[in-house]
Image (cartoon, rainbow, N blue to C red; front, top):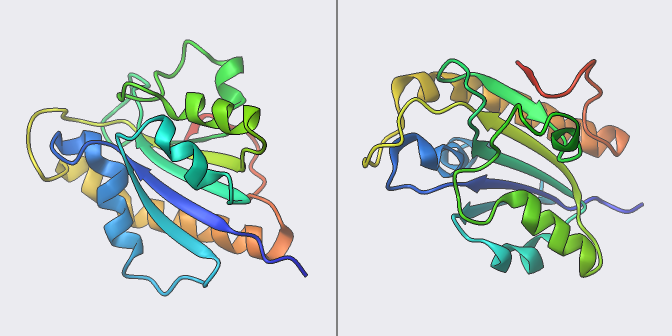
Length: 169
């Protein structure tokens, strides 16, 4: 039986408080004993150089700051295709090359993984090395959600089935 390769990628800039929340969150996940087929990757603010790193992966879970004009700490779960449906609802990334461009390029070059994005509304994008309290407070819930996605992939070969995408969790 094929064991799916799963990657959890934290994206963002560690120097800009909540902008780096994806990378800060990976430190939380590192404290959990993950299955051998799960890899954690600090995507940082890297752009197209991420393409070759994700092409070997079957499932990709991205954690990133997301501007949805919501309360700080608001948590959203969506597939990249959902953004074509609600293009005005989300400004997906604060980085120069968004993850959607990376996925599109991976598709062009051969294969993009099945992808799920967990986006969190930041409170602050100021200079600083710590995330704000609102973001730190959402990490335990996010960890629970990401671990249940990993379990679902291992058990059913897919992400969890939820009633609707792009909604605040």
